[in-house]
Length: 179
Image (tube, rainbow, N blue to C red; front, top):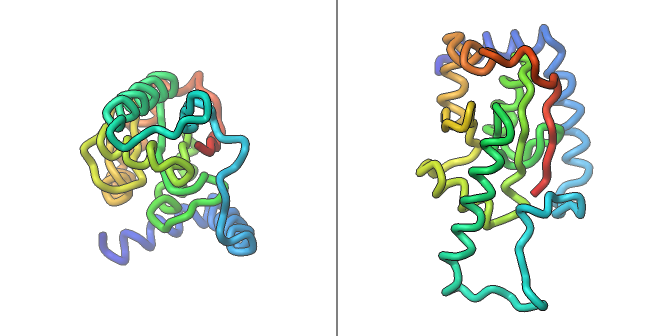
């Protein structure tokens, strides 16, 4: 992306007031650096232990199948889903931040999953999509891409067309989920 293209994104975000929110979120994130896994994590993405037994490494196939099924179900339950580092209210990497800013600039409802709270989810989503990096955006259960692809589609107006079709009846705010 050219610097002019990035400037256009920044200006659109600035006009909509999102940069102020981002600055506020980043300052609160730096004040609480080190982040911990929250107790409010969704139980679907918590490690499953039976009678206090820790799963062995050779049981990885069964564990992998479980997370793949949970990912599939999460993609079926929400139209726009973002797997990211951190939460929309406090992204933990610049690529996740940029993707959140783009989704917020379009005022599209989406569900976000924090992959940093579960190594199983972090690796599972990479395997699910056959895409090695995070964030990952899905629309209607289909993998759209990572930050660069999302940014490019946004600049061309393609992303807004994709996410806004048939979304008039959806909620209007992002949902933070820490897993």
